[in-house]
Image 1 (cartoon, rainbow, N blue to C red):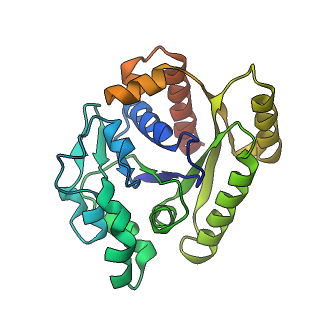
Image 2: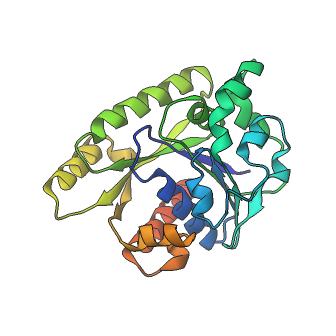
Amino acid sequence: MAKIICVANQKGGVGKTTTSINLSSALASYNRRVLLIDMDPQGNASRGLGIDITLINKCVFDVLAGEDINNVIRKTSVKNLDVLPSKLVLATIDTVVAAKSEQPFYLLKNALANLKKDYNYIIIDCPPSLGLLTLNSLTASDSVLIPVQCEYFAMEAVAQILASVSKVQSTYNHNLTIEGFLLTMFDSKTRLCVEISMQIRGLFKENTFLTQIPRNVSVPESNAKGLPVTSYRPNSSGAIAYFALAKEVIDHEER
């Protein structure tokens, strides 16, 4: 049975999509069968895996509207990694679907119940908001991975996402847990970055990944190429960090 992990933080630019792409790819490289669900209307996770979203007919929007999820999943160039793509029409889901549904926060959970292919992991890339799409993702997930950029407003964003997780735990998904806090865009030469890192680890010691994702030029380069950095430059510091993160996630299951 698949472990479902959503990557969420309502703050933009913290590395959610980059983490979703490269954690999925790294898990696949460890011979795990992985499905990446792109829940962001911008479709950047889909693009980052080489999917031209202007050419696809169906996306996650159609799945939430009742289409069989098995008909919309697409293979990627990465072995063991499939994607449920997104495009801009997903931004209209609130008005088009939610108004017609008595349980709008269970749309994704219900769709995943119909999966025919076996996966070890399902990774969900959430949009930078706490709206319907993110709440669907949290409701459908076993755990939430929270990327935290080491910068000034980090703690405020953490407080907000934890409040949302608590709300979902008490209403829609009692079994939701914290997979871990992931420090992203880490630069040991920056004093503020080090201070935020120490603060997060001090507050959430048991729930913070040992792995820190460094700033690395290979990561944005790989995004532009439509490839995970783990495939584009597997020996870069960014790729090595995501391989280490995937190993930590796997180790969580083996405890």
